[in-house]
Image 1 (cartoon, helix red, strand yellow):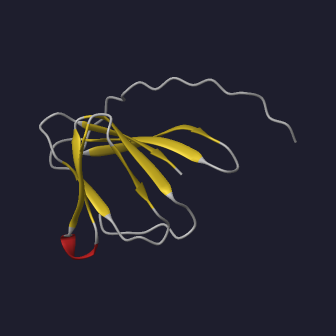
Image 2 (cartoon, rainbow, N blue to C red; image 1 turned 135 degrees about the vertical axis):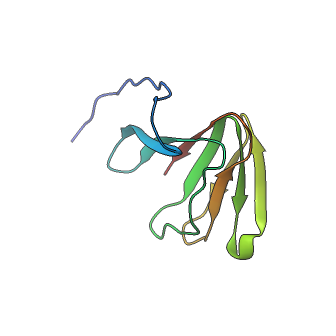
Length: 105
């Protein structure tokens, strides 16, 4: 089945709480999300077994950690990281401004 090109636009959402994930677009092979994480927000150690994930900082800063809370990357605007499937990681916002981070998997 042939698909058409799909246009999209991202705008940072207003929300209550510490973090929000927004689906920007998707297909049968990939999903694109933007996560917005306010100062002090983080997620838990986890892995994705079925997909690699590309992360790119749009605004703010982030620290990525591996097992044992080992720092694997400290990223600022327009810097990124590739997390291979099966790799345990977590991340936290690392600046006073909200983190906006693009995830393509």
